[in-house]
Length: 112
Length: 114
Image 1 (spheres, rainbow over the protein chains, first blue to last red):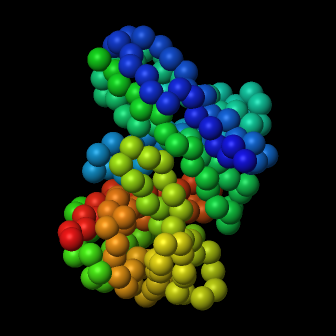
Image 2: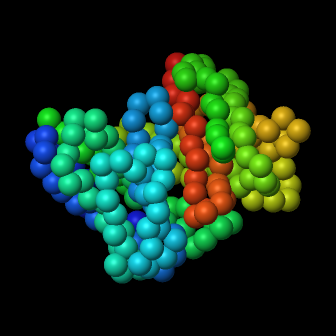
């Protein structure tokens, strides 16, 4: 089973460029999440979705946009990348409350 | 607001010694609690989870954790550490309202010396 798949795995951007991270899950999960991981800060929630067509802000949403046009996909966009967005990004999904949350393998993004 | 505190940023133990990683949480309702492990350059692997019932939870790789409601703690333990356990460990509280979100602690880096 593929589980949660993130693309791309690695990317280097110049300041001001835009890009989109794709998260795909094949488990028919309703809930999907985007987290960023920075040293000494654990994982912080950027945006999340509780179903197709819905999105909501998490703890650190500024500078990011998301879309959930299809149930299996959750896209994270950076419209104008900044060095502060250099991070490791993790996507996750779950069936719902009380269920295990599954994580992708991460996307390493560097903004120079 | 919901929060998770892992008081120890780094811990070093000798191979074969016992291990306890501390986790305290702040959450108004009955929490769902998780421990994840992350090896360098890798994703997160679920070690164990507590949803309800028995407060002593067994996980993979010989780990266990005990939920203590009176202390708002969910400490992770292993009786004998192996060199391959060196990694970063994250405690998280889940089921957070408005989206079943996970809130993570800052992590504890475990070093194992031979």
